[in-house]
Image 1 (cartoon, rainbow, N blue to C red):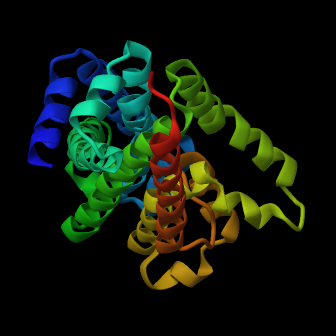
Image 2: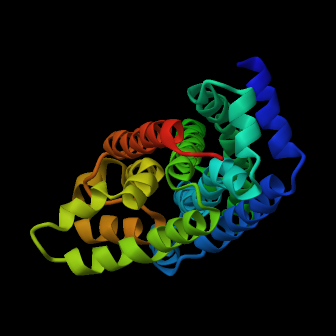
Image 3: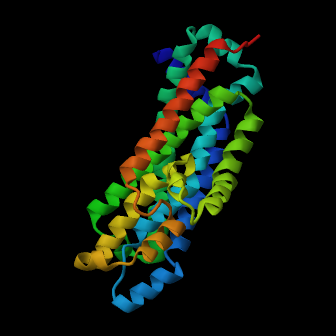
Length: 282
């Protein structure tokens, strides 16, 4: 297994793809965190209260939710890219059984997801510092909790991508499906379900669950830090507005989002194991 893992690291770092997808993570993490700190509704609340708010908690959620798709794409191309380059045959012949290859990729891409997550945390923090100043970070413990959730979300998106790429094994389809699903499909579904009895279903969709890992943690912490003892009087509409902008779903616990998304990742990984064992590579 050690040899397979080392081989996977060599495959990653001898190509340009890993840093090409890391660049938008850095740019979006910084930009979303910086621009998100100027959200109009928050600025008006700050003026009314006469004190700075921990906006960095919210912008970390926004930055993570924009950036995770690139970790997912990187993970998805772990298998799909090898099928495109025809190197999967050599990989399977030298890494038999095929399940060992999947295991090596999961170990390797977990570490890559951590790298992407650390880049997201670092540059989102710099963006929050540029937009909201030191006071925008809130309590140190709250900040660390939200950052840890961001790291976890990035890793899970990477692993889901690995499983999805193993199932589909076509890089063009993988890229199109992930991008369209995250940025178009769920948005359309949400619009369709708004106001219906089935509106809560949207919280269990992969994209919403992924964003809820951070958003459903960051928004309640922000409200608690801002309102203090008056938290119970904060209107639901404000929660919903913050979730709409910064991610997550009102009234949906972050740990349930975590379990839901981890479940999707596990399903795709198991599916990837099943199909990779049976797919013809000749």
